[in-house]
Length: 102
Picture 1: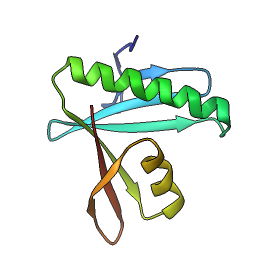
Picture 2: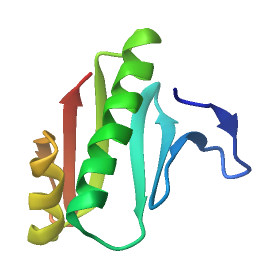
Picture 3: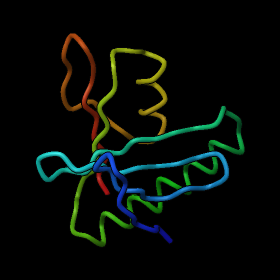
């Protein structure tokens, strides 16, 4: 279950597991997902899938139909986001804006 609590930076803490923390930040009324990983492994991949599922379920329950991610121009990071179902909706010289339906 997603536990929501305010953070001083204006972010909302969405969920935290052993090696994964996900935060939501709202800009112009849209939810942006921020992720923090402690390394990378198959078990963290599965854990992140669980975290993402909880966040998407929470957002659906609040009436949001999409969640967004903004990343710098980095092909490895782009492939990572796409591996979890995020699609490019905008591109600038500095980076990408991606979205996924909840």
